[in-house]
Length: 439
Image 1 (cartoon, helix red, strand yellow):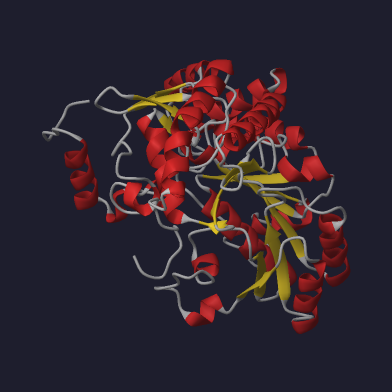
Image 2: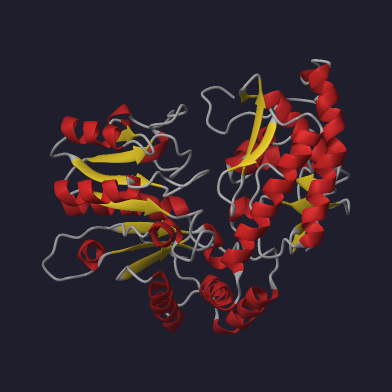
């Protein structure tokens, strides 16, 4: 790639990004406020479980493109498929044969939905699901799970967060909230809005399995009250199972959304669902039209080939089993190291094996300064670990590298805690939550 500007180092990259891009990145989760000062300002390439900065420094990647590269960066079978796709052109003027072929294969692999609409990102898919639920039920209100951090950058969700600026209050008021694993909170919503709830949308799981009967209880209540049940499988899909939590827990929603790992980092997302709901977005003569989702690049050929190749790897290789086994082994070893260094009350890997949740506490509460110090010291040792999202390319060498880095960093973390100098040990600013009212 021809260089149009001179870059001398990390700070030049940082300044350039912020000069050209609001927030310095095209997704806030990759922003500077999410990483310590010593994090690489940019990354240049990735291979397997590893990434490289322009200065040549190599990092073990535990975030894997916001959990999207579930097979690994630059996975050969996927790359080969995309190289083949290039010979067909990437965007034709009528539907291409590959979108129908992949739609058939994808729906067959999931096992329950009748129809699918492809798009380019998860926000589009979840927003389309909410729109479709409102059209199907002719009701105004959408109900989303309060504890789950992100469903969409669109107004129906952002208006319910702590940074709703730019969203009309009238729009924000059309989304209400219920609590995860709490059927009583759902019952209260239904009692308050007996004829106005169009849908319940939630991730089937985040850092733990739902309590027995919770998802089944949602299904029963939605059936009884004519509410559309939507599962957001952006993260759980292609990580728990191809079909995510719906397959893992044996509960069938009315609509579901997928993205992240379905094309191993290529831009691909999907809304799937039951025919009687999905067909509202079709072209049936005489029916009032639902303008569901319409994306120029919604079925680009390169992403379709990437998605098909990814699907084939999952169907022929033990990807799901590997993710769970690797995560379980790391959880056990990491927690043992924390205890060994006297950090058992501060650092714990908990939750589901395929995506262990890193809990960092001080005084029994989450602590941003201690989290920043941990990230700083792990980066110093060549590990990017804002969270743990293992891929199929994470093997024994990567496991050892991660654990040895923590083992080496732990004494410094313990000393900072003992001396009550955690904040003083952080170079630069402390990381912040993505959702906050004031920058």
